[in-house]
Amino acid sequence: MKGKDERYPDYPLFKGLQRPLELMGIQGRYIYWAAGAAGGAIAGFILAYCLAGFVAGLVALAAVLSTGIALIILKQRKGLHSKKVDRGVYIYACSRKV
Image 1 (cartoon, one colour):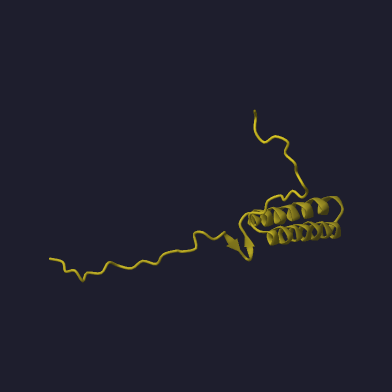
Image 2: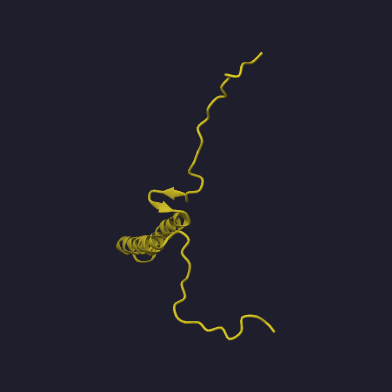
């Protein structure tokens, strides 16, 4: 017969379920933005290299990567769930049908 002092095994519990996904300081949806910027930079490099040469390819790679990184940094500062904020005064003449 089992006694009342029987202990059940302890298991580690992951408590970070309510936090956004993070990879190297980039959070949530911006991970996809970073992957798109890297893919676009590689595609731009290949295209510019084929059309104009190595230096033009490097310029295209640097331009696309720096633009992508700047957009990610600026957007991520506003927050992961940033919404469009309408500025101004709005007057509603009638809010419901009569």
